[in-house]
Image (tube, rainbow, N blue to C red; front, side, top):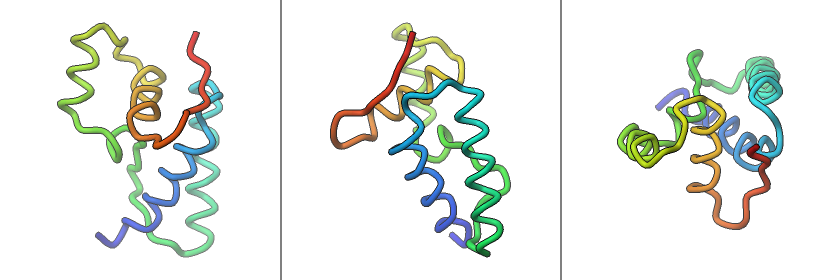
Length: 93
């Protein structure tokens, strides 16, 4: 519970901003956001993972069974699509 503010901040930033970018750039963004969070003394999980924070493992397993590739990029896209309340902007080849 103590790391919740920073985790929510980074997850919300990822959800609203990282959709159109590839995995490498997404990881770089998350790293920079975590560094900025660390600099502002907002508590966050050192092992933060967007997909683990916002997706249920059973949902991810169901996606994989239904044919979604098990790579991080596809799983992140699945989380973005299921958690956005409007129309997610994303590019998936």
